[in-house]
Length: 165
Image (cartoon, rainbow, N blue to C red; front, side, top):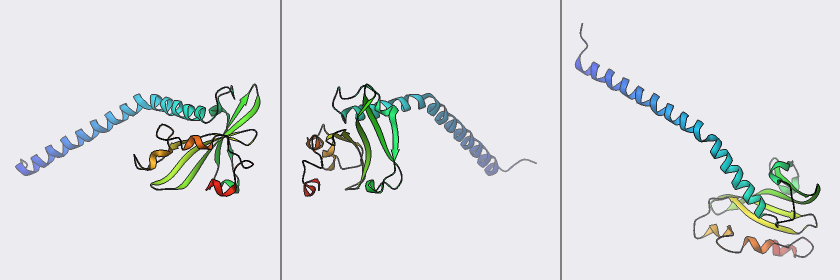
């Protein structure tokens, strides 16, 4: 008994669609496998660059990204653990870089790296993740304005509390 033409057409189209789906999933999986290492490497390089921009050159000689610790302190209001990267010079701690989140950006959370020298002065601030509007809210990036550079050298002892707002 022969199948009606409409049934054969539906069967053929279903098989073609299924084959297309299998090939597409296969291509995506292969692409992911081929690029995963490069993506991880690029993410690490970007993080290393941001960490190095948070501290003055010559103030450390380790790789802070390899000295990751987690802080759990209610003063940080971190809802979990705050990443802290320890910078050392010849084995002696010289600074810490905290990864903190400002929850109240115009377009959501802003993730910052804040470098703090051992004497309590800020060494640098870098935004590493945000969704602020280009041309308006993205002025937190150092290549756009000097806003982030304005924190260098400030500390709780040389800056009035209301000036931090």
